[in-house]
Image (cartoon, rainbow, N blue to C red):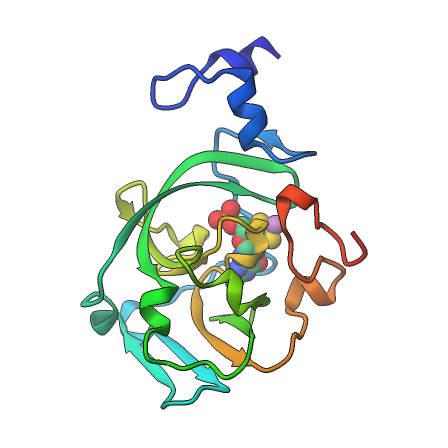
Length: 204
Ligand SMILES: Nc1nc2c(c(=O)[nH]1)N[C@H]1C(S)=C(S)[C@@H](COP(=O)(O)O)O[C@H]1N2
Ligand SMILES: [Mo]
């Protein structure tokens, strides 16, 4: 237990109170970066990657190739992440494009979204959880291209919700006028997944 409190990140000591403030109920501090994938690790080449926004939108559906995507403004995001299998990881450094940037001019006509990935993974989110600086499509981790096992070339990053919402090998989001369960949500996980409310399973 003393090891848990005494070894800081980034050379800095963390006080127990600070940890308590940052680690949601039922979670433990993880120092590594575990890989959790239901199924095979996808191999997506830059040339075949694109990010699409479609569904119930006022304007034309949008799509960015890898090169087009890299012409967009990128942001550095240092954030804590929380997996429903109970690990939390502090100060993970990602780089990506905000969903606010991607949704700019899209005119969503529904309040929900389904994120979908190469390989078929899906996860549902209220549009509110993707906007106002809360979500990114990330292509870098700790200053390097996002490793393939962690969703490279690009993953969704929605750090304020349990990490299953952060779809790896993300291919796009479909805007919907109603909520609909994605892959894990159909298998019993919570519709929204707020770690501070321990919204782990459907009935939590
Ligand atoms: N495409 C895809 N995305 C996914 C998953 C998956 O199986 N496939 N697993 C989810 C789950 S349950 C978690 S906890 C995180 C794990 O991300 P990591 O492997 O980078 O830690 O990815 C999420 N995104
Ligand atoms: Mo997970």
